[in-house]
Length: 254
Image 1 (cartoon, rainbow, N blue to C red):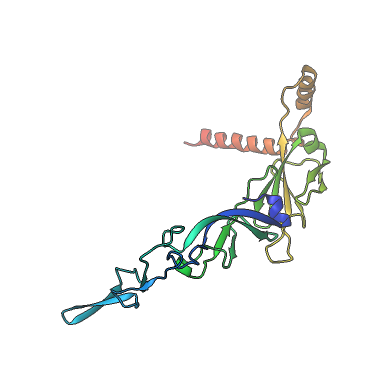
Image 2: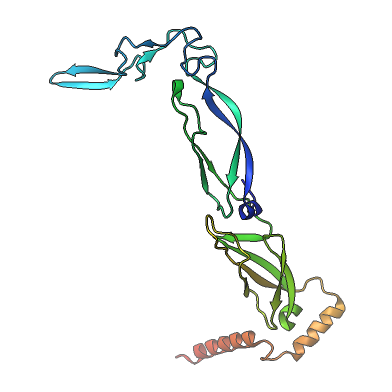
């Protein structure tokens, strides 16, 4: 799991993983030191056996050596004959800029050792992005929800918001701003993986209703309400006009 800031800047991470590595005691053969695996007597080293059934000849994996062509009479005590042991290993992983949740990073040859001296496999690392306290990510774009006061929304003003590069930017709010209005800040989003493109940042405002008012504040708001008209609250007036027409049409219906 990495942070959104890590995905923005990129980083080199150190991870510890349990992996199977070639057994040093037997050099991956699975046989005790001083001994060697012997050719399987059942399949003669072919790893497969044939069996005739009527007119047909069936070929299957040798049950004695499980297809390896060799058997171990005296297994290595360190790996019990498997040729590999489990150890903790620290790896350095380069995480590029712009990675997204679920991005897969492949490290060739860093997987588990092959059985009895076989080549190692690959290691796949899946990245998960932790939730951020301020930003929500949508591809290369970032979204930020900012509450503003009723007065700022009505009269206009400005406020500062942080950016993912740990900077700040000012957002100007025009008078009469409503909840849900979005402001676009170009080039302040996330970098696109393996590209020079950069996303944008969108700031969405939410007009906050005043709470825990003093008596004086309540009186001032009540006075403001008396002075309000259709020009100050056009959406409310328009809605209730439609409601009046709706009930009027129902009353006149036969």
